[in-house]
Image (cartoon, rainbow, N blue to C red):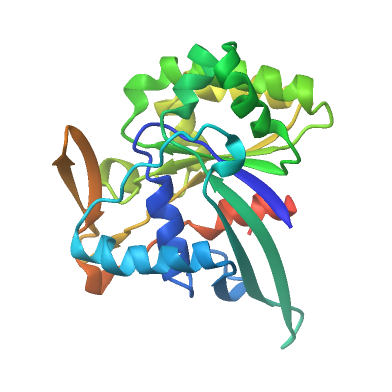
Length: 273
């Protein structure tokens, strides 16, 4: 089983992503070689995510943000198995199964890494980010490009520490979220180009890191809500509550997320779908 840390930008929608992954147990994958994709929530906490999606997302109520616990090991983690039916030669069909545990980190953690990683109270928590981890899922809200330089400074600190603690290298899946929005939807099939244009500072940090053979990076686009209708309208509504903005589903009957499987599969296997 692959251990994955999910750590992203503010309001990138990581908790919503995981709830959607659990709720839609049959997922679409863009690759034509994949005939079917089944997601199975394994532990009881993961199965509860499906209830959150049913009772919260479909009723247009925002999920509570993940809080920062005193210890990394108290952070919510969820176990999934993805079963793929893949087209083989002639009429053959092959089945592939990958399992992973993913930790849902609070969305302010990426900033905290730069500001507090040297403080005594944060050290133990921070150390947990590097313990027996197979890969890092990095969801970045597609509309947070104005914060690119701020996040890049944190990312530089994180990749430097990652190299020191894990010299054999690991994988980072940089995933642009909220790609149902029109400005992102049109470029969804060019994730590397999108990141290079919208997040040039973070892109440079990651590319330099990989060129020095310190790890591997791939770029992905995703949306927990997807689009609907003839004109591919975003299936999300931005709401504001207690001073924070968050997206909720607009049309539950047309709920078709996309791009959820690809980054997780790559983190587990090192192969692209």
